Length: 381
Ligand SMILES: Cc1ncc(COP(=O)(O)O)c(C=O)c1O
Image (cartoon, rainbow, N blue to C red):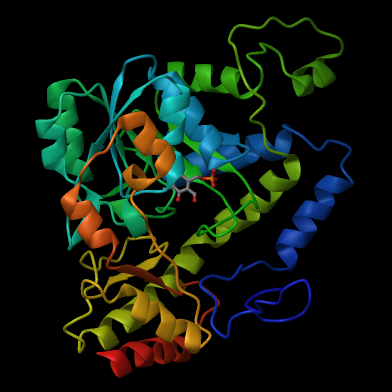
């Protein structure tokens, strides 16, 4: 499975895919063990995964969810996003940073990115905008600006939430992603630095947010099936209008193995990114956002090509069977969002987003692949 990139039909669609899973025998054994344990949902594996994840991130609590989007939805409710609350978010993010705000009845306030060197939300937007909440998204695992955003949000009484979905293992000024805001959320979707197939983790230091989020994850029930199984028959009450956002024990078992490998995987990413950066230095027309630092998770490797050149560059990669991607089409340009917010202009975000190309990056990739990819760019520019 590892690094093979095989499809179910046994055909490789790309010579170099954008991403490939890194899974081994340990993961298979852990999942198989759960299958023969007699308990498949929210139980000991989930509790152990949560404890280990919280310890890794350095927060008091962690709660495992069926997806990052589900965890964001609950994090937003538990921190108080509701009707007419104004929430500042970057448009330069994945759609699901934004959709749960709409489900909560909150009002989306889009903010600009900092610039070509930093694709994260600009701290100046926190200073300028009159909002109740701000969601920070460290693009590609780089947390630049988070300390300034934290300081400004505290000064202005704004609640800070982190969408850490690019930042598994990222450390900024000694703290991991998820330690800066009231709550943080990690997606554990298939292409993330570590995965449970589908899944998400909510992290927080706040006991009340933890208590509410735990209830909301499971129908608002005061006693869960596992508690009742362990304690014999038992009554329960419903305290919240909740959801079923639980993940399975198989996913938790997979996540526990993956978490142990996270630092090792991130080191492999780091070596590849260093090589990319070294080779791309010679190409003045290709810009690399962010200044490299050791503790970034390097979830993706974004580059910026000259304005108007994006399609041509992507076509050259397709020609060489190299898969690329786009992080991101700005959220405010989607039809459904435009219907909700009306037409919005974010000139800097738009300008930079339409120059972005995401190059392949995953732990099983080799440095020869990096050279092949950079060659394509060298031939163009
Ligand atoms: C920035 C960001 N936020 C949220 C999510 C949503 O996570 P999930 O796919 O686990 O629901 C993702 C996933 O790709 C993401 O990249």
